[in-house]
Amino acid sequence: MEISVELGHAVGPPAVAVAACTLPSDREGGASGDWHDVIALPSGDVAVVVGDAAGHGVQARPLKDALQRGLRGMAMTGTEPSELVNGLDNVVVPDRDGYATVVYAVVEPKRGEVVLTNAGHPPPLLVGSGGSARFLTDTLDPPLGAPRAPTSPEVGRTQLRPGDTLVLYTDGLIERRSRDISTGLAGLAALAARLASASLDELCARLLCMALDASDPSDDLTVIALRLQYNPSAAPPLIPTPLLPAPAPIAIAPLAPFG
Ligand SMILES: [Mn+2]
Image (tube, rainbow, N blue to C red; front, side):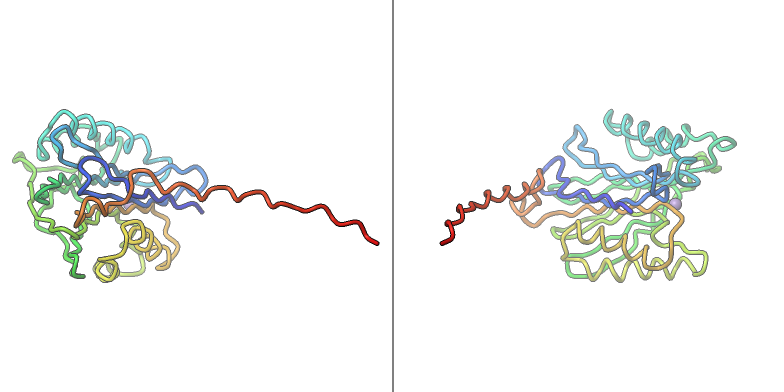
């Protein structure tokens, strides 16, 4: 089993730090219907993304790849969040692809303003620096590929204060056949609240482990967390701490001759 952890993925302004952790259900090949992204936008804002294409593993990969590429292209050319959801909806051909879900959140790093859209995805979790946790349930549109009203997708707004963490994740973290989804959501919120002041990489890794402990998951698992840092100088380094220098060779003194 391999868990990938990205540390100190601090793109864009240094006041924002991001970490992510993924575990594809295709343990051997690594194919996944989940994806996540961090995009330093030309405006100076930072976008974080989590998405889930129907199915999982190899079968879901083509749609996932198309959505990830499409989203990046639109984000980098300044497409507004609601228009971006409409654009992604056009990528999905329901009869062929099924459907997909996505959360797209744009963070203005200096003031902590967040603009987000949610197409059918589990709600983002806002973890306060003091240990509170609440789901951002106000913004929800149908999944990509599902019938939708002709009106523009909803755009939600929220505010991050220094030390607050925005947690995005896929349904693999909270859904089990054997239990109600609200149980999974409550467990996620309770653990994330306890980890409010943990490092981002620890928070992501422990949320993923929580899902593994609940049962053997057959879905892909993804969690991505963004934190507004108190102090830019306290942000994780852009480059992981170098490995310890190789130990100096041990000097072996020649054995003194016996006798
Ligand atoms: Mn899933």
